[in-house]
Image (cartoon, rainbow over all chains, first blue to last red; front, side, top):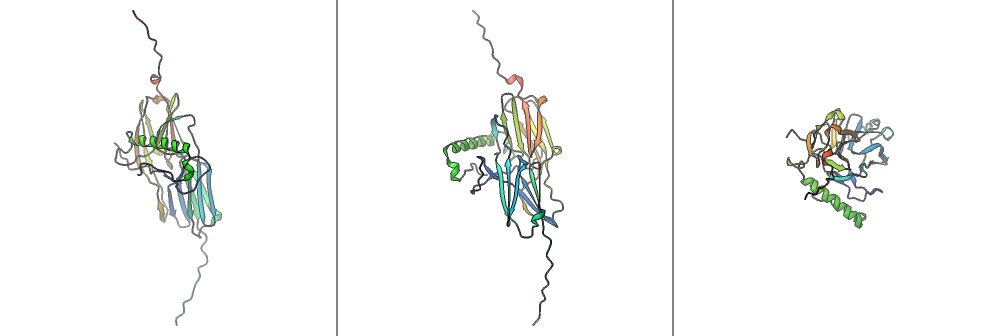
Length: 132
Length: 151
C-alpha cells in the first residue's frame, strides 16, 4: 500500500428546509475561506457542477452560493454508489467591509473561487482624547 | 460517521421517496463493506460510483480541485488504480477563517466486478469528476451453447 493521507469527507446533506425544486439531495459544500491583504477568498468544492449552473447571490449581508449538479449516467445501472449526487447550497453572513460591486466568481475543476474584495478603508477618524 | 443518514424533511417521507432512499442507503452500506473502503482504518479518496450498461463499465470519481496532471490512472483487465495528489493552495493568504477542504496524497485501487478491456479505456475529467469508461471484456458476455445429444 502506497502512501495515502487524503480521505474523502463525507458529504453533508442539508437537513434544514433549504430545499430545491429538483428531487435530488442538497449538500453542504466544503469551503475554505482565506483573508488576503485586500480580499476574502472563498473556495467551495462542488464536483459535478458546471460554471453556468452556479449562482452567487449577495443580498444585504447574506451571501448565498448554490450549484446545480449535472446529472449523468441516465440509462446506466448503478453497481456501487459511494457518493451521492445532488445540488449544493450554502449561506454566509458577510461583514460589512465587502465591496459588493467587485465580487468575482470563477469555477474550475468543480471548485468555485469567490473573491470578495474588501471595501476601501474609510478615512480613519481621529478622536482627540481630552484630559480632565 | 453515521451509518445511516436520515432525512427529517416531511416532504421526504412520501412512500416512493422512502423506498428510493432505502435503496440508496442499502447500496451505500454494501459499498462501505466492499474491499478498498475503510481498509486503512479510515475513509478513502476518491469516492467512486460504478455503473454499467450492456457493454461498458463507468467509474466516476469525485475529485474537485484536481488538475489532469495531478492524477495518474492505470487500468488492468480487472483493476483500476487512481493516484495522485490534491493540493489545496493557500499562498499569499494572511489567515484562514475556515479550512474544510483537505489536501494530500491518494492512491486507490478498485477491483472491477467483471473483466474489462484496458486497451479501450477512456478517461475524461469534467467539473471535478473523473469519468472512466471501459468496455467489458468480450469473454464475459454470455454465449449460447448448443447442446448436442449423443446416444
